[in-house]
Length: 411
Image (cartoon, rainbow, N blue to C red):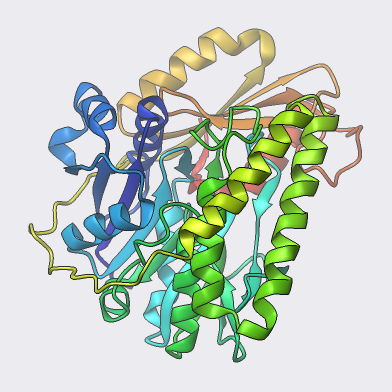
């Protein structure tokens, strides 16, 4: 099939280092026909220039804390047939766009979402979910080896995550883009419900994977300790008044308050917050809800693409594997960095003589590194002890990531 032209939109605020890491991952994509649009605050724009990415991307400076409005600015500059979204604190697996765009061969499909891995690079934060008109999300069972195209029932939508989703540009424009009343949170869920109401199908694509680091922000610390719930409260007010019936709205808002209270109580127990802080955060949630009720909907004008498609050249070399014992790490990492600079996709496996759990990360040099004990588990549902030899372990781990990494073989 021909590779659809894709515009990748990245919104960034207050996280220049994360943005650079994200762009390092995007630069390793194994897809022949995409452009990159970065909508960032001044510090983010400076980081893009300092890292040398500026000539390769469409760079838009935007210094307001409104993710929906920022995504609309990216959409206005998008010249691709499909617009893909990823957060600035996430990196895509090399075959991300290859898998994420495949369902768009079906004319019924207007949106697609993939799976999201967490900080350890192994466990999943999100897989497939369904969401109802009051914002209640439930797990959805799908085939984890291939895309599933879904037409939700009335009052429901297929949930996609803003850090790993793609939408036909024509459908986005027809729906008016993202609703700027959602400064943060629920903006993509609102879009999901509007897509469902419009009769569009959404595909869940398990092999379209990104790794989400949950970087610190004004709303949470690096350890995930909550710092503010005001915008979450405001977004819930907009969402419930837009989608949830008046008969269910009060009950659902109470459920949300209970859920947030449980989250804060857990953080108090774990020592991440003091009880007084938790109380202040809940007050902020209520104040945010009251403020959100005053946000009025307005028309959103999104122009046609301002510039022609600006192709971003991703990884052009082969995808290869390097593997060794942990005491060979320095030499192997040096070799891996050199090969990435040649345009190759490098997966580096480093095993020690232990049962240590495995971790996967994209290094700042663009190397996909997996390290852990030779006898330790990678997937978290495995036995704690894995009785296996070195070559067999490498082969098993390579087979596990080959579809998302585009691996050709061992170097």
